[in-house]
Picture 1 (tube, rainbow, N blue to C red):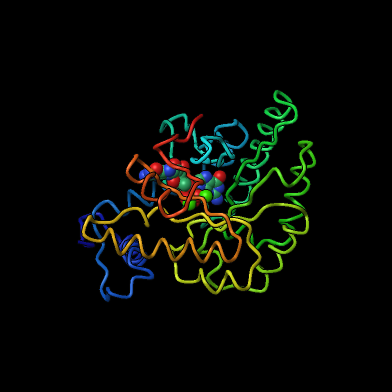
Picture 2: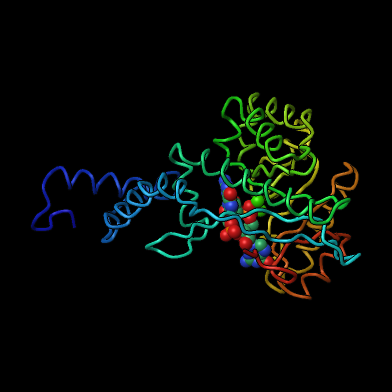
Length: 289
Ligand code: C2E
Ligand code: CA
Ligand code: CA
């Protein structure tokens, strides 16, 4: 497929590289094929990256909020800030269309800081509107952010600039960030905690590092990965047993659990029966502009 009529040697080796990239990290595949469209896709990715600086300048990134609910008391307990990109040519983009791309570049830090700053601004205005009410928002930090030196100082200055105490912000660190369990990560999280931020482990149970991590890192909240709720009917009992064990373990460690991805009443009943009361999912709210 490389030998299309106008394919010069440079293009051929570039296509081979793209094919190679497509199976990177996939140890079950030993041979990679270039497929039609890979070149176009890569071109579009590079074009999108070129747009990031303009997007930051023109306020194209938006914060959407997905409320989190205490289903026992039917009360809001906070909201997660989720980025959206209102791209002038491509319309409203969801994070999966650009976050992984930004994570491979140096831009992720700038975009995350921008979103966190905007989030703090919203929280400040909410609190001004409803004095006395404590409003808490969760923000996402990518692995690259966490490993960057000075990230805690950056976060401290963002909350300060917006007139908020750090306890109004829950910092979500996705489970895969803990994979190497590096000294750097442990010390950064310690720094965050000492500064007064709340730490959430995002996507708990999606990887294989979770249990050890709980021992080594002082986390405040577990966010249960939504795949725990996606099971076939014949696996219901098995899934319930696994979830119940996690809930028991979290209880022993005094860690509250937020269950993600609750989409319907039967899922809500299922997790409530297991003792989970904090829920983030489409059943209550989708992310809202
Ligand atoms: P996440 O941190 O796990 O965020 C939760 C995702 O689950 C959100 O997708 C949310 O819309 C979706 N979700 C929530 N409830 C349900 C449900 O009941 N059913 C289903 N099917 N989905 C549900 P979203 O907004 O598309 O974000 C995807 C991911 O992109 C996030 O996953 C997070 O890893 C990343 N992301 C979003 N905003 C940011 C950001 O500002 N910075 C960074 N670094 N990553 C972000
Ligand atoms: Ca998250
Ligand atoms: Ca999550």
